[in-house]
Amino acid sequence: MAIASTAGVTDFCTCDIAIWTVLLVVVCVCLMLATGPYYYYISVDPSSAVNVSFFTISAAFLILVAILGIVGAMKKHKGILLYFGFLMIVMVGFTIAQISLTMIALTNCLNPDSFFSFMCEINKIVYFAHSTIIVIVALISSACAFLLRWRLKKQEEDPDNKY
Image 1 (cartoon, rainbow, N blue to C red):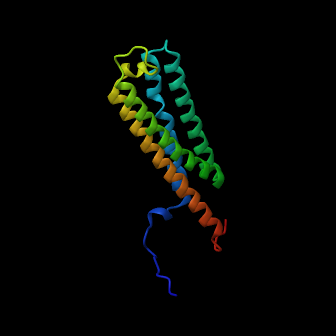
Image 2: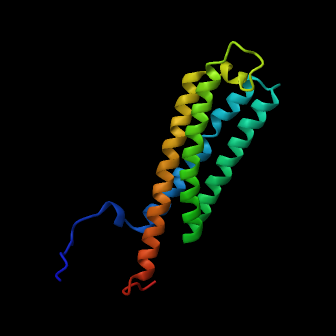
């Protein structure tokens, strides 16, 4: 069986490992920066314990996950990268569920006894734009983690690997 030569053709997934490492670190830093609007959300109603705890836990989780991604990328640890990639996919699911719960909460804004009544005070455009950015960054970081892990595994299996 003849194998077609692909010399001179640059494949999207066969970039150097350093490029995927840097890209994953940059995306993780963007994930950390995405916590900024959470502090705005907390300032909307700082007296509400649900508001403060909800957004503080979300911001702390994003920062910890981003640190995990940076550590996995810098150490080039395949296990951490796999865990980080799956965690990002789960985070996409939770963010979509959070958007759905927000939509339900916004339909009940006239009831001040609602558990998520603080959501009615938040700028909806900022909230949904922010949630969309988190979903996009999480998807990109998941793809980068899986691609970096794939490249590391491929490099490890390469018989011509001199490193």
